[in-house]
Amino acid sequence: MPTAQSSRRHFLFSASAAIAGASLPAFAADHPIPTGLPADQAFKTLLEGNKRFVAGAITHPRRSPADFMPLAAGQNPIAAIVSCSDSRVSPEILFDVGIGDIFAIRIAGNYVSGAGVSVKGSIEYAVAELGVNFIMILGHSQCGAVKAAIQHLHDNDALPGAINDLVNSIKPAVLAAQHLPGDLLENSIRGNVRRGVDLLNNFEPIIAPRVRSGKLKVVGATYSLATGKVELLI
Ligand SMILES: [Zn+2]
Image (tube, rainbow, N blue to C red; front, side):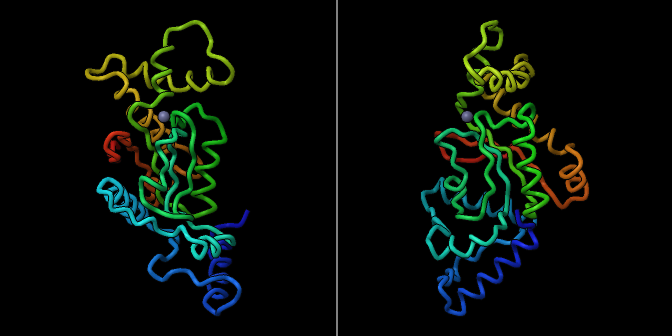
C-alpha cells in the first residue's frame, strides 16, 4: 500500500495531469481534496458537516467522477471514524463529506476493546500510513448490538455463530453502566464509546505517542437516529 507521502505525490501527479487536460477530468475547484488536516480542523469540518445534515442543508461534496478519479492514485482522508455497521449510521452522509474524506471502520456495536487486530490495525494504518490526525469513535442511539449485550447479559445460553463473541465484547460496558443513574441503554452506549477512546489514547506504539505529542486527537461521540445530531462525549 502507498505511504501517505507517496499518496500525496501520486495525487499531485494525477492532479497536474488533470489540469493539463489529459484524459483525467479536472476536479472542481470549489471542492478541493483534503490533505492531512490538523486534528482541530478535521474535527471542525466534521461538526460543520453534521450541522448541515441536521439542518437539511447538505452539499454532498466530492461525489462526482471528476472528484473520485484523481483519488484512484492515493488518498489523504481527514479522519478515521469507527462507527456501527447499522444502516442508519453512514458517516459520509451524516457528516456531509465526500469520497476520500473519511477512513471508515465499521463494526456492529462500534467497539474497539475486544475487537482484535482488524479494527486496531485499521486505525493504526490510517494514522501511520495515511497521515490521519483525527479519530472518532461514534456510537449511536438505539444500537442493536448494545441492546443485545444488555438482553443477554446474564444468559448462559450462547448466541448463534460469532454473534456471541461480538455481544460478549460489549458486555463490559453494560456491566460498568449497570449501577449508574439513568437509562441503561444510553449509559451503555456512551460507556462503550468511552472504553474505546480510553484504549486508543493509551494504545502503543503508534497512537499513544501521537496523542501525547498533541498531533493526534481521539474523541468519542454519539449519533442520534431521531435528530441526526452528533454529540461529543469525550
Ligand atoms: Zn449499532
